[in-house]
Length: 544
Ligand code: GLN
Image (cartoon, rainbow, N blue to C red):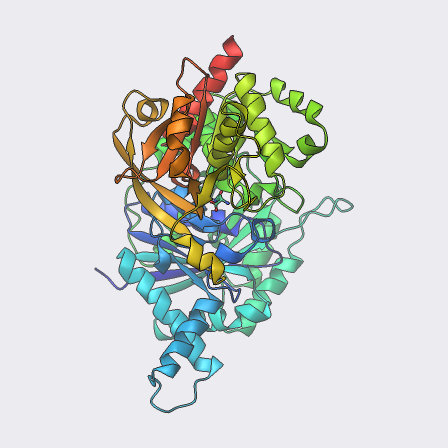
């Protein structure tokens, strides 16, 4: 293999303009031309991973096969390239410092003092190269969180500069910048982007490409100005307007010839592109008109972007709905309101189905239990993800078995019926406040019971799914729950852990919860079978 190439994706002007999707799309288009790629995310925070950060603060915590609790962008990478991300694909400032300090304690610096410069950038480079090695990637795309000019980004930018100065022909940077169009002027402005470019120069980097995020396509004038400012041929200024769905982004990049231009810049042959299925899907999405109304009964709504917090759930609904030629209409339902006024639950009647997604802590849980019971009684399709399965079980115990005040020990440690209880290996951890990366995390096998909704959906007898939880169905209550009609259609191979709970089709159109998070494994071209089964049930309900 030729020497590996590295592409740094850096943000300019402001964050949240879709840098992650841009990095994932670059991975996608290079992969579609037959290159082995890797997508790596570097986050600037000191946390060792995203696991201890509030979803409201940082967006969803994406869980990898190996149990890594990572930034939501890894979800974008997986959805776009269908490559499994692991701990090598995710770096934080905290990880870098922890490793350097560990080595210092091991006397690995030979008695020298250990410096922020150059030891921190050097460790960043080591990690970038480790990612390349793991993925055996010909091209590694490294996305930096935040925007150029931020203090905490400096060691990372320095790492990129050091790599570039050593191997100028193999290291590239792409600036993803924002072009505002002030209402008053009605004209795209490139000045903030010009400043971002200057900021990059000041740390010894010059962009090889500029991706212009804006509401409308970048005008030729603006492209010209930017190309002049950074002495780049105009074809290296890429237009990235707002799109109907994120899956349009690679298609749009290709409209501006990003794949070929990028490969040419790297001295690599263009190769034939295989993006047909993807383009077909991207073109189909905006044409779908028939709606399916899905309510998400959750609680992480009181903050900036609900879309970030539940991104994998939203995308899984999208994938499954599109596969059935339906346009998802997602309605956000704050479960706390049902606790104050149960009559509000009748708003669920207007929906085709509801999802209760993952969550932690007591707030809003009673409202979710009420919603689960309502969906049970009114035959509204219900899909529970992790916490949602626990809610389903609690509701069943309370309302069918008449176990008064049944609960999870997470919500009520003194409940008379702890139908959901702390996992055995979690007791010590919780007692010692050992909360970081200590849940049941990552991929586990699950055996499916024949002739169940789950087995029918998966068309398999054994599956593997990703987990992130501390509590589980209490084995003590399984017999009683089963006698009352609940079916545990998925169990751990040793039979001890209940992974899927459901009601048979003759009892309810769709009433199913998973202890795992199926949403992490749904892809646009291969929707998750349980989401598809749920959406199909929602349509059926509609036909009645
Ligand atoms: N709080 C629950 C648990 O820890 C559910 C977790 C989740 O939904 N990811 O078991």
